[in-house]
Length: 321
Image (cartoon, rainbow, N blue to C red):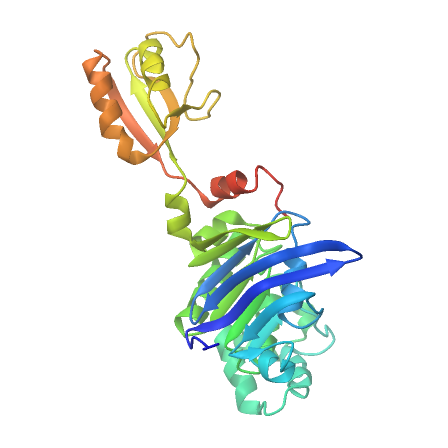
């Protein structure tokens, strides 16, 4: 099998069975060079189990994981040299300085020099604070030091599990910008997060896992285009407009929508809003039909789908972690 040089991580038909229960059911996806790949899943979906298999902490029952062109099962040392990982919160020595922490971790990785420690310190932007004790660090600084630790071995893939967990809004923005900067420099990032809005802003592609299976994978924009938009019609005759919309193919009224009232009684108030789910391509056709029916249109408001809406649709409303 030929190896695509643009693929840093390849997961093919990955399975994990624990006590006769199949936890992971044939998961497949690729992470490409220089991209930010989001990994989303409801509680109990198998997200953490998958991550542990990716970094060799547990063995899969079946399937293959290829890192940097090496099979993790057959050549773990060569494969895992290509990955750096932080699962949940980084484990650090609070009584040591940031620099001393990096020195300790560097001893475990062959070939890491003092110049590399200085380089990763610069990459994560800790500056002179690297010489302060870690117990004085904020959560955001601890996360940065953890990332510096993961970068010591010059990996081509960085796996971050909930990198913005516990950060304030400013810290979240700084982490998002930092992750983008790493990707711009050619590093691939695999980001697990429960903050769907952050994933939407941050990631190039995503995989959504539910009940141990990947049920959607692709570019964020492409996946969102597959989800119908919410369109709010402000009209002169809500009753007549409602009847017309109910008769249109591919149009679903959203009763109780926060964007508008779709009450059957829905009066003749000026600009009464009606919220529907429909493809944007159908708007001109519906608009013409309303005008032909003598309904005045005061506004058409298109609300594009979010990653959260896509997530809830494909997982049938499961709770995310």
